[in-house]
Length: 200
Image (tube, rainbow, N blue to C red; front, side):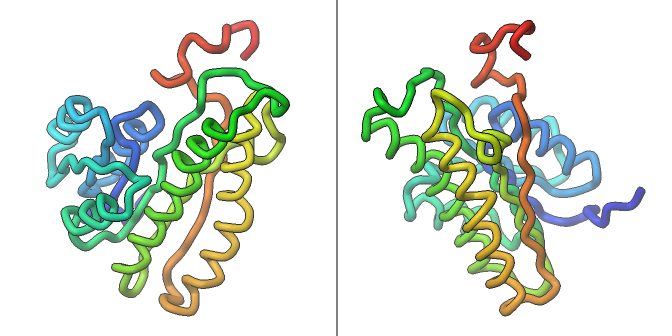
């Protein structure tokens, strides 16, 4: 099946992580030039970019910081697709009654703020058609006990942010698209060891 990605330039945020690296490989397999974003996983990102070849580059940025997001988009160059995959699932199982404001804010920053700044950066450089892909979670649809902070952030991405963006994008670029996916539990370096096979 022809996906139309051959020669397209694609930014994948969080590409040094489990879901992000799988997405980067999938885009590259369809002929896309992939910009491999990382925050702390520089070595993994550089290795992945080398593996992907065909114009793939690794670019670092803390996506909670406006200045670093702006530098990332400047380094990435003109983009056709942006997959906003970066996010953090906090390992500790903490009910709302015990949840600190510090963790609440950190989780929203690591998931919702990063997605907002990534979407804004991509849309500022968008001309004509293009595709923005947001990554939510089934936790944002059905909730997740002990992770209300994460569920709330992902719900905001899948709801208000996604629906507002698709209504805004059509005004600027009628051929552009904004979509979201909501993966369920996924084994990755971030989640490994926190859930047993019996629980899955």
